[in-house]
Image (cartoon, rainbow over all chains, first blue to last red; front, side, top):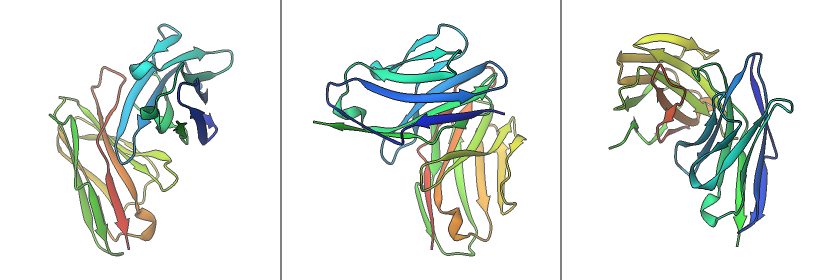
Length: 113
Length: 112
């Protein structure tokens, strides 16, 4: 069975500050891991994914995430927040090929001017 | 061109009615999904079809019936709508040999 825990349902940062959104996973096999972003009243857009290649993954809009097997984590970071980053962020895990995604509960990111 | 599209975008209906939501993808993908996002924004998979064959069926009430007339379409029919069915329903698709699911814009269903 697979599961995802996102620590912090709400994260607030100042514009220009570091963004850190936390994700821990549980999986009985080597996982595939994903971060999706959902802007208000829109669908989900893939930010980045880990599929057993490089452990540091770069995505769109300046985001990156690092897979740490020893910590079962896949935290999302961005060095400098923009106002346009305000959205809901979802971490998801899939055992194997991405055919079945299990999502975390989401983290609402607020960026303050 | 929209990759994964859903109609309608908004659906408001009375309890007890039957309604359908349609999904189409023009990506040439062979696997399609329905997800439900509740009021707390929690996303949960409902169904998955691969080449018109049902491959994932979570513990969803049998009032929900997906139908895939062809690889590019996956519709969701809901009978006897209940208040608890109010949610945003997302369609997604994926090419069988790859790992990324692409999501539609969602259908916000409100049951009164």
